[in-house]
Image 1: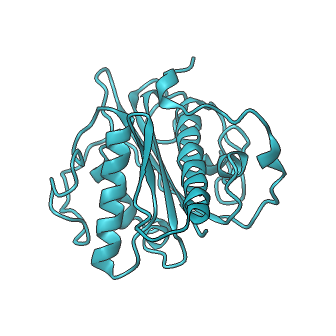
Image 2 (image 1 turned 90 degrees about the vertical axis):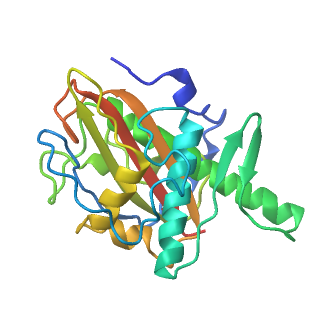
Amino acid sequence: MTCTTADQLPARPSGRGATAIALVLTLVSIALLGTIATPAHAADDPLLPSPGVCANDTASAGPITLQREAAYCLINAVRRNAGVPTLRFCVMSGAQWRCNFGTGLSTLLVRQRLAEARALNDGAQYKAADLMNCTWATPDDRYPTGNPHHVCGRATNHWPAYFGYPYQVLENIAGQGGTPTASPMTARAAVDAWLKSTRGHRENLLSASVRTLGIGVVAGTLQNSFFAPRGWIGNTWAAQFGVG
């Protein structure tokens, strides 16, 4: 059963040339952010801006573009507050890409950065879909029942490389669900959880080595139990941080 609608995924490239890119060392981290029991809400991480500074940061539903923008805004606000450089990103606005590359760049450099940002965006969106819909993940020593970073048996950087991103990638993932009513995770909740994680999420988010950010978010019915019991309704998030 696939719960991802067509408008939640970008079109795949017509060719598979991107898969020929040499695989690079990928640093990963993971937190299984379930909602079987809902604890009292803890105070937000102090690096987060106040609610509402980033539009739609507490919205639990809505267009993917707006949810992505909220996550981009939050992550860059957190990085500014921590004194590390903000990240490049692009979002679709109507039929156009809107990016934060700054001014004074050559046409060639703008095209290169756009291609990289789109590849990370598309890769993160497909990863979020895998986290929602795949029923299994490749096990390893750390996660003998299956590492969610390797859902469907795909390496962590599978989708960024597929869409043409040639550099090292750091990845954060999250998700939650509820039943019988959907319980999606907001952009603010996802970023706050990563900041409070002790499994490398915070380090990835605040890394001074990364330059570009892709965000994916998918809503539907979980086909696995990575973040909540299988069959619960919610969403999954993927943030892919590129060093290029």
